[in-house]
Image (cartoon, rainbow, N blue to C red; front, top):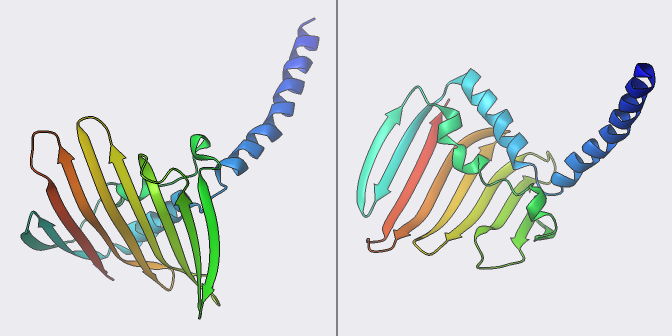
Length: 187
């Protein structure tokens, strides 16, 4: 009896494995931003570039050079922008265009103005297929908070060269906070 239950459990498990793989493929319908960011963070951890950072908050600017960067923290906003989530399946219109030596892939949120990633645009070199730029527009809104940000990654020869985030945060009963952050990597 135990061997029958074991074989039944094994059969159920083996039958469910392909479905899990299939569901992974479904969740990667859009550009795999998560994998791009993970590979870049690994590369950055091994190369240890410095970052010349410019931060402007409500018109007050500060510049600094950072040597030991926690890349998981520094690039978390990009990791959190991945749209390959089951609840977002079929929520983006995909458009591919070619412009000279560039291929543009755009993912536009069908529910424009609703909370979420509004748009992701990937620019690739047509010949090398290397990513040159990732542009993301994000909007968050609820009864007490609203936020809008545009974030960008710039690459050269498959290496992250710079990143930026520009936008505002607004909390009810407080002034709007405008910010502009740019990091330029020095290898």
